[in-house]
Length: 383
Image (cartoon, rainbow, N blue to C red; front, side, top):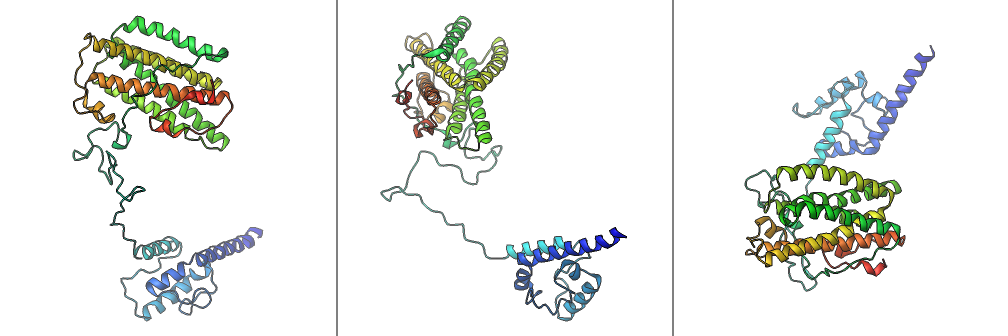
């Protein structure tokens, strides 16, 4: 008996609240403008014989019958939408409102706006992003590379200081420094002077730190409800840049079966090691990457020396390298190695800078040059 008295009351209140929500949303006014159905909403609706302005009242069987007769008597065309049976009225009601909104005049977006610089002249760039581009699988796609887009290309900073070095101070810096020297010993013993194969294998490992660092910093910012200062983008861009190095050198030297197996083992081991190290000490992890990049500069300098001495033929640069680094169409392998070495020097400075900021407990945002492969001096915050 108690339930029999409570349920109708709760149901009536529920429909009354829903009816008020429909009225507050202005659906009745919207339909009155579009089809002339609901007039004088909500106070006086003589053609809607509802007991009250609630959904239960308006959707009762008696109300629907009377409303249908009134609706037809007013000469409304049979093709116009009508309220469906009780229980299915709410969804078509909102769809009718959506149709009314879709018939409103839309702003004209056909015209384009030309971006100008401070002098009023059009701002021209060597590449323009594709607008409304078709899928990359489309044979008519206006960009032939699927691994990067035109806006990802740039000119390397060949004037970067290649001799910059951060002296290790403290236990964590020395740990990072001697760990890199230990890894360098095994790399020299395995690859010797096969620099093309060395680049292919080591670039698969070099792309790990940026991805791990960006992921860990991303999760940290989510936990602490704060911004990253641009460092997530810088670190992920570093990982993407190292991956592009791999794509370039894959067109120069194909890894052997043993080297492919080594890549699987080295990547799995280094990923686990670096993730654990970054969890324990992000400063040490970034310092280790800085020292790794210093050794990479040495390796690519030796690569250049062998090209200049004639031990390695100076073949034409791969097309992917020409487009990625915006090189001269007649660029050679030497130009590719120069661009790669400049990138490694940039990563060296960015990671040393990040380590210095963490050491000084500073939350400075990433410098703009870090995103544009420009000059970054880690010594401005000490070492």
